[in-house]
Image (tube, rainbow, N blue to C red; front, side, top):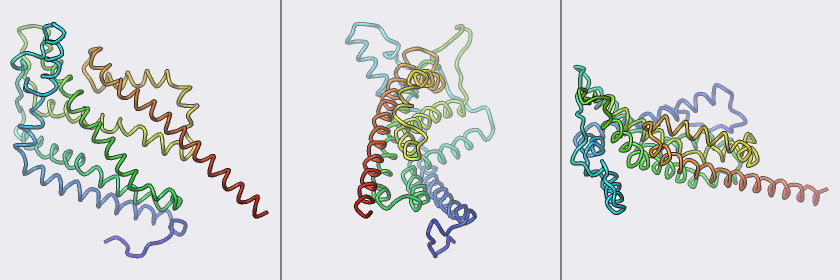
Amino acid sequence: MAKTETKSPNEMSFLDHLEELRWHLIRSTIAIVIIGCVAFMMRGFIFDTILFGPKNMDFPTYKLFCRIATFIGFESDFCADELPFTIQSRLMAGQFSAHIWTSIWAGFIVGFPYVIYEMWKFISPGLHATERKYSKGFIFTASLLFFCGVLFGYYVVAPLSIKFLGSYQVSSEVTNEFDLASYVSTIRTSVIACGLIFELPIIVYFLTKVGLVTPEILRKYRKISLVVVLILSAVITPPDITSQIVVALPILVLYQVSIYISKRVIKSEKKKEAKLAAERAKKS
């Protein structure tokens, strides 16, 4: 098991840090496996309700777009009875493999707060006491952003991708019969990618703390960031302008929030430096 003795971060060698990290990763993996086992036993809910939800036209996203189109007075494919594709498994172990890996990814998504908690326990000893006070706030904020991204990916990106790709045909002679692994991968990529992208403010916060990012840098490369955002949107969405704009908008909002966060961090650091300088001046 892990060592019972706790050493100061300044006393720990590089190998001690690796050992500490190893146990944090082991505990995180155990949590993911346990939750994954629970998800494995909830096969009907995971697949029929969650994964195959965006395949049905009564999915909330399709109904919302249908109502909007009806209200405006336009005809829309979102009001169709069903999507013109079927899902099949061409490999002998295809369904079992999809079941296993889906359970593992479900374990990661649900167990994300605990994984963040373990990572925070690893890095927090190297922080100041005043910075460690915000650990609970960090874990809550990081988890909230991740789950918001997951929900955005599931209710916006995934259904738009499935609707576009599932309805796309080069000829009426070709029918869409997707493999189970391909369908699951589309939803998984949309959900995980959006969840991680929504962590942008947290990433900028830490990069600002270590001095790698400043508000000026973020403003300077705003146009380049816009291009990067559009590329990311093109990667995780179908190749139509509407879907890319829908995905790009929240990412751009997160980028603006990140600039504000970076500005607050810099301001806070300057206040600390001024306070320390004043205390030193009094002592001298």
